[in-house]
Image (cartoon, rainbow, N blue to C red; front, top):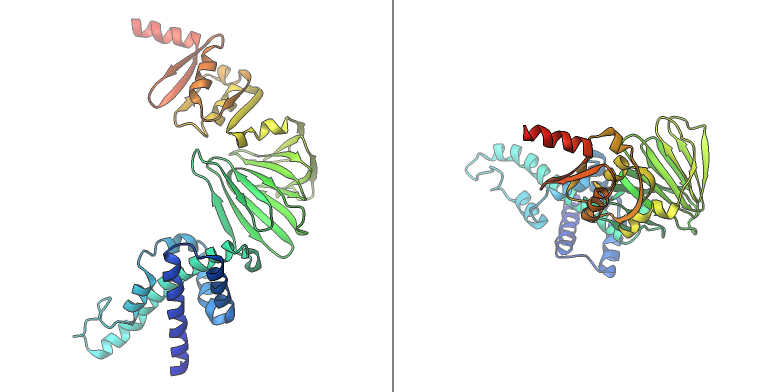
Length: 354
């Protein structure tokens, strides 16, 4: 590399460092974000490191978070003769052999950090689709979130859920990695809107639908409009699903059934609504939100059909409701709520008495 090229690359590295240092102080305003975007687009050299690290580290966000040292410090160390074991007393030939390898390590860390900053900035400008960059959104246990997307669509995430969004020239693709999401699809974008969840896939245009990825199957509920549901295992078969209908996709595409769509998305209002649903399934839904889990071992009780509307986070009210049911006993401890039959409770009481 010529001296002039080396100077240019060093200048680019210093500019990247300045951007990184500024961004670490807090989110950039729109003007500064736009200037950073212009800088990235000025030359392929500016994004060369970005593309290289992206190909080497698909999970670059996690990698970037592991870089805790400010980038200006990293660059200073990379230029220093007295870091990473490069003691001045070493013979110059030895230092010449070690220095480039050490510098590459620090350059990799710096580039990873730049990658993270650039990705976040591009998406903050609602411009991530131009680069086809994936972005993930997630919620923790007990958390819910409404996330606007660059095309005007909105994805609502239920508790302990995650989706990954990627835009292309002809398609908007969202993968439901886990949990449950409600999609409000924007009408104005001409690209198709496709959702993947395990073996299930859904294509929608200007509609609102819910996708719940469970362990054994994926449940799709249409609130407004129409979607096309198909399975990766059976790509030739497509089911047209209209508003007010629901289907489950596992090893095969199930039979669609009419449901109360608003009740199916009651979780948006922090509620659980059920109509003649098995107690085991309802308890499992409560366990997605509450800190104390319901434990029902009795198969007969798990199959007991119940109806009602409850606050998803109010386990006390649901436990009190179960205690009013004939033949049902509720036992509470610090870590769980045990639901058993009256006969089981009597047997356990008699056994202890003996």
